[in-house]
Image (cartoon, rainbow, N blue to C red):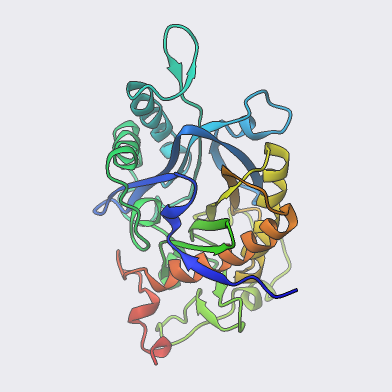
Length: 330
């Protein structure tokens, strides 16, 4: 049987999911909102040991709600979770949510990265920022890869502290095979190093003190086996897989779990106790497609989105991006 051709598409071509972003560049933080006014089925898989999340219980297959209206990816760690309230207010004012007689209640979930050590630790995504990102998603979707939205303050390679880490951002990648569309958005903020999953080449991570090359986070970890108290915790990679195929919540939890293979192929170490690594899977469509194919593609598009998060980032806050490091050029 001939192989079906796969082609790259834009992340916002999928299933009517609209993406809005806003950020405070001076403070080094922001948020990204993925929403669908009609609602969307969603699943979640959390592999990191330190997540910051809002309403994640809604995505348990045993929970009653079968659809949600928005996913927020944000900065600010647990402080930034108040952005979800702004998203809810914006959606309610636009008549989006489950009818309960006196109003409509939007169901909004959120996961955050830790970016408090990047810019101004006292400024985090809040109600106003969440409202604005949702408004933009509804009225003028403005998604961009790079230092935007939740990727504004993202960094990687932090096992030795912020002095030798690199600037990354938010990235996306999407494909279509026949009628099936699937893509990923990721906020790359890992403790570990980042690799091109196709050839194993390191593309971002822990730098030497003079920033002339890479060190290995895993090798540095192996230098001591004693328990490290108060380990550096400014981490967490979060993302979402979106598809136009029809899956229920249980199937989407499985697809989200398979998408974590994309994290594991691209980030080392990953899923540590000081990362909050979380992936949502969102279904917004009626296309019938094999779940295992979708999960396999989810891992692939997630790894490609991670590469985009590295390539699109700009140096900021004193942290160099890959495009500006001489040893990575050429």
